[in-house]
Image (cartoon, rainbow, N blue to C red; front, top):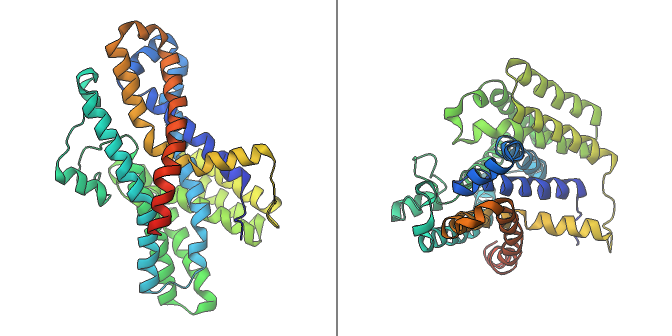
Length: 346
């Protein structure tokens, strides 16, 4: 059966992925310095605000994973769900890290100290393979590595809530119990834990935004007004305690998804969707590949400025070239690495 696409979800993933790439281009090395010198307002916006696109991924991730709470999850099913997510995320992640480490090694002489590979030890690679690099304070091999670990933790947490609800209550009440547990955790995160930066290596710091996405998905099952009210109430309470731009963005995306999902609930799949929708779907399907593989292009752009100083005057052209090259690399990576690994290991 052809999977039904959510065009708004696809569009959010595509836009958020591009913003993350541009944030990293504006954040590292002499390329960042040159961008700031030539267009400070734009570079400042990319550095301070484009990174908040991570919140879009968190909300969309919860929206797409919400079906887990509907399932009856015993111990074996829990391990299966966790294992599936690990196999989906980690094999391409490790390949991308090898690409980043190889690029940093080849370009070492032209990279500033903050961009050089901090460690290539077995312990460093083991920490990344186990998604514990932030927990054990191991320097990341590539920018954005922290998010892969958090995504895995959040999926495992959601599966754990479904398992707990299965154990605690009768089948007809299981879904309600799982949602109640999630709302409790999301509320605790948004009202308290998310205000403590020392918690950011853990899912509990991010489960508020992720949980808003899960609640937005409930709108597809009816009672739209009630779910939107619940989302708004939780978000407004969190912002009243402490205003956080990233949480305001999460709230906005969750309400948008909740409203759209109800008003535009998909019926039968479109045999041949319009070109724009096909492009959005293709971009969304490659958003993880772009997230994984763009960092070597950031390194290459910085090395190019060090090797050919005259390029500094054209820093925005260098950054734009890196962005376009990143799109090409992501397409190749998705086709020849990510998708084959997924088919083999799922």
